[in-house]
Image 1 (cartoon, rainbow, N blue to C red):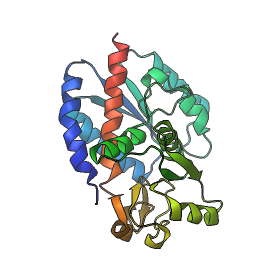
Image 2 (image 1 turned 120 degrees about the vertical axis):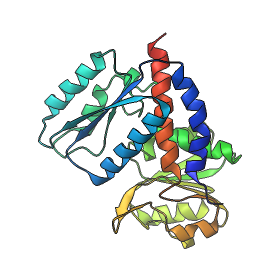
Image 3 (image 1 turned 120 degrees about the horizontal axis):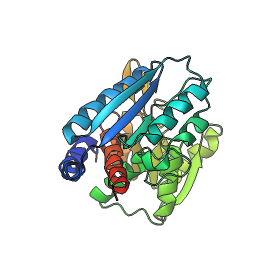
Image 4 (image 1 turned 30 degrees about the vertical axis):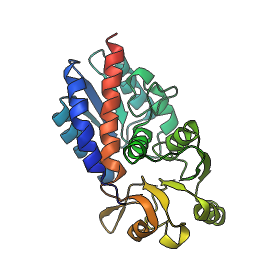
Length: 266
């Protein structure tokens, strides 16, 4: 089965809009440093969805030459601004900036991406994966799960989520592809976020595996995931790129903005 994330996202949209209508003045600030075509693509998606939901979105765009202290000071100002509900820093940041330090500056109560030092919401990608499992009645407990990648946006939060729901989790980066290949061949569930197009081939997977491709990169000018699209024939459930996890992840980001806004008004 090929999962159409856009369909699941549309199902959540009406519910989220109703919640947003009950909270006035929801505002998401998106910080972008320098230019990145992939980031710009997601900024456009976020803008369109924010308009549908009724959340104001503001952009703070900075030159690639901005210093770490300058960027941190801007985030501190936004932390103190009571009109701001949530703050998102588009990744990746330029090399001269310490990404961990920048993200740690975000007030956890204004962090819908759950990337700060002590987030109070679940990461959007983990919520998206959970929604896919819920919608398709997939029981994760006790299953062998492989997470490919250790990144902040996918690998780390998804691994934590899978552990929390009782899966037996193995997490890999690309340093040892032999171990990864062995683990993939035995996995009941695979979630990949390495950002390497074509990394996972059909013959690497056992028949009936659940494969969640949560990676986003570009190949020949097109958005691509880690899995060869032909993997779908080997899977009991497969999320393609584009159109799989991505639409759900973005809507779950706004679900978190609404949750943060609700907490801020208590």
